[in-house]
Each structure stands twice: as C-alpha cells, then as structure tokens.
Image (cartoon, helix red, strand yellow):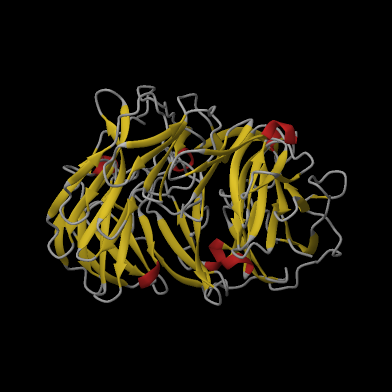
Amino acid sequence: MKKISLVVMTLFLAFTLPVNAQLGKLLGKGKSAGKKSGSFATVWESEFDNKATRLAVAVNSGEYILGTDDNSATVLDADGKTVWSGDYKKITTNKTNKCEYQYIIHKGAGKGGYLFLFDEIKLGTDRVAVIDVATGKELWNSEQYQNLLPKGGTKNIEGADDGELETVKYIFELDAFLISQKASVILVNANTGEKIWETNRFKGGVGKYIYDAKRNEIIMINFKPTALGALFAGFKNQLVKINATNGDVFWDATFMGVIEKELVTRRAIVDLWIKGDKLYMYLNGLQVYNINNGQKLWEAIYENDMDGGGKGLFSNTLNKKYYRTIADPIFTDDAVYLVMFGTRDRTKYIEKHDLESGKLLWASEKITGAFSMPNLYRANGKILLQIGGKVQVQEFRQETTSSPLGGTMKQTVPYIYWDYKAQKNGVLAIDDKTGQTSWRSEKFDKRITDLVIHEDKSVFVGDGDEFYGYDIASGNQLFDVKHNDAKVGKATDVIDFDDKVVVLSEKGLASYNKKDGSRAYASEKIKGVDYFYEIGGNYFLRDQRNSKNRIFGIDMTNGETKGAVESKGKGGSPTYGAGIDISGDGEYIFAFKGKKAEKIRVNN
C-alpha cells in the first residue's frame, strides 16, 4: 500500500525542549492500558520553521523529518535539529510557489529523498519542481509537463492524500520519474530532470511495474488516470515490456479488467509476478502471458461484485470502500489456487489450475452468501478456506479542527480500519488432490478471525466469544475455549506469537497456549482498538475514536503496555493515522502537531 540546491534561507538549530516534554501527548500511568501501565520516553521535541499543514513525515524512518505547507518546507535531522528551511518561491528558479500537491520519495538510508512539487496555474502553465530533502536545494524544475492534475480540481481529487500523483510514477530501480502525458510517457532522471526517453506506445498511468535487472527491462501495466481520462481517445488496457535504456517496446498486449486504486493508500489493485518464462497478472482472477513475446497463454477471470453505486454485494461509495475481501492466490511449483466468483449466482469457490497449461484440475463446492473469503492456506494435504471475517475499510471523513488563523475549519481525514459484514461464516478444508470437501466448521459469528497454522498439523481460529483448535487432517476439534471469560470484549484479530495465539479484542488482549488452548494471560482494558501492526518485532495497537489517534506499544510476551502516544496532528502516514509515523524497525514513533514534531522511543 505500498513513497536541491535550493537557496537555504535559514539554517539554525531547532529549539529542543526537555526530554520529558510530551508534545505528542504521551499517555502515562492511569491513562495507558494493559496488564501493566508503562510509558514511552521522549527522545526530543522540536519545531518546524513553518506550520507543516501539508506534509509531516519521517523520511527514511527518521533520517530526516520533513514538514511542509503550501509554500515552504522545513527539514530536521535525526536529532531534531534544523537542517534547512525555506520558501519554495525562493528555492526554485521557476518560482514554484503555491503547491497544492506535493509528495515525498524515500530513497533509503543515507540517500535522502525527493520532494516533488506541483504548482497548478489555473490561467497559465503548470510548474513542477523537485527538491533534495537532504540539502534543501532545487534539483530541477520544468514547465513542460501539463495536465498532471485536472484543471481546477486539485482539492477535490478522489483519494488525494499527498501521495504519489497518478500521472507521475517513481521507478526506484532506475531512480527516475515516469511522467504520463496525453500522447506519451516520458522517463525523466529524478536527480537532474533530464529526459531519458519518450514513447508514444504506452499511454496512461503506470498501475504496476516489475523491473528485470538482468535484462534491464520493465514490464508495466497501465490504467486511465483521473487527470488524463478526458484527454484520451481510444484508450486501451496495455501490458508492455520495455527497454529501460531507450524506451523501445518489445511487446504490447491487452488485458481484461479495470485497474482501480485504493481510496487512501492509492495502491493499484493489481499484482504482477514473474515465474520462469511466464508473467502472472492478478486482476479479478489470473491472466498468464509468455514473458518473451506477450502472448496470452491462459486465464481464469471473473466479474467482480464490488462495483460502486450500491449495485454490488458490497456497496462501495465515493468516500468509503472495502478491500482485502478475497484471498491472494497460492502458488506451488506446479499449481495455483484461486478464489473465483460465480457471475450469475453470486457464489464463490476455489479453483486449482495447472501452472504450466492453465488446465482446471478441480473446482470446490460453491459457497453462497459469502461477502468475503479473505484467506487461503495450504497445510497437511488440505486447502483451508476462511469464509467471512474482517475486511479492510478505507474512507475519508470530514472533521472539524482548529484553524491556524483562529476558530475552526473542516478538513478531510483519512481512515484505514477493519470492519465486519454479516454473512455465513466458517472454515472449509478441501482435499488438495481431489477438490472435495474434507471437513467444515460453521460455528462462527461474523467476527471469525484469520487462521493460525501450527506445525502443519493444527489450526487455530476464533470468533467474537470462542477460541477453537482443530486437527487439520481429520477436522477433529482439539479444544473450545470461552473467550468471553477473559473479559476483554469480543475478538477482532489474532496474532501468531511463538507458542501462543494472542487474540486482540475490543477491550484488550487474551493469549492462549497452542498446546491445549489454556489462557496464558488477559490484559486490562484497551478500548476502541481497530488495527494492529507488527514492525520489526514490535507490536502496536491503534485507537482512532473521537477524532483522536492513539498508538499503544505492547509486549506480546505478557500483555504489558510499553507506552502510548496520542496525536490529533496533521500529517503522518495514512497507514498509522493522523499525526503519527513509525520507523521501519518499529523502535521510534514520530508525533506531529502543527509546527511541533516529537520523536518517541518505543523500548526503554
């Protein structure tokens, strides 16, 4: 889901508050939650030179801290000290100024990043500029690239979350931007702005790409971006293999389906894999191509029932959409397993195909009334299918917040969380050789959890009030534990943790031993948790109630709370919620509120 030698106007050390200051509202004892209350330690608290109303993010997991507004940027270093600060119109030589759209490219540790600026000129020529995050210098600018966004529509773009532009794709392996224009796409050196090549044989935005380093080739798939939709005549779905050096197209193939982007994360809902001499594209089923010539070899596709307008089995809306409803394919050396849709009767089922020829080896029984089948597992000669359970919701909400000029203002806030749909729920075990049902269990309410597989022999699964263990081979129930006795509320998720399964619940955690289902611990109350993260072996819970964003650090060995932080700030990562970012190793949390930024240590 799955992001300049500017004239530095001011260079000074940021004012640093005492280490015990709690800018991001650290929640201490009595306010934190868990078996035992702990507290995070503030490493530093600093201020941006601007108000950071646009972006507030940790670049490369905290190597730099970037804060921007429409007209300026400030960058702090890992110690919270100002590296550079300046106005865009003074930094850029083409006077790029009111940048209503901007995004950050993280280049990796020690490499800094790119700040891409787009200045929409309603009655003139749009401007683009790229700033080096490490130095604050302008790397390049251009007025050549137009129609990157719909004229006059910058603020109203569906899913506009200061992420990558639909018409600008950063190709990490080439350190280059691929910019979509009406008649062509242009590859531009990200560091210099130099045009590397241009081709008119690929039109649209890049939905997904794979880079082949051995051959220096790119395979990429297109989609019709919002900005260019009205400009295209005869737009067609394209899958191409292209020479990364000069832009020559080796082959051009068409594909079935429409690529959409997730509402908040803007991840293209399509996957590409290269296996041997074949390219596999996952888009409403599987489409398989010869990687050498682009010939379609076989396909197993379906009509999706997640359309908008209230017609689908799940009704998506403009500002709220459902994801993670269908399990990803399972590949083996010679076969692939897919969840398929029955177009007419709204059923779903599993198909096993020969990987080489595409031949249908078997189809499972059809399952009616299933909104989601989010997970497939292969263990002990069985294919285990989870029917029902949590689905991911991404939405934008209008919320009232304090205005920098006084009073209040409305702002659009992104949310990503899990929810449930009422349907028939259960676990289905299918014989891997025949496709026949081996056993099933339908004891579960809508809160059926994901499955946890142990040593290829046992499977653990819960629902709102119960926690079960099953023998995979026979389907015999190993145990049934009353989860509601833990008094932590209804289950929402499961975490596979060593010899235990931790059940994340509405009000806390309960941990069960895999050997017999006995309870290892139950935490005190943590209410309103809607998401958990495992980052570098660190575990975090999130609570977004009442327009706030709380992140709890949890020790999964005993259920104790390491600490908690609360933020209502602008910026941060949409993945973690408003005002919060977390380092890639999970060791630090960054909290943002207006001009203020705070770095927080997770493990004391």
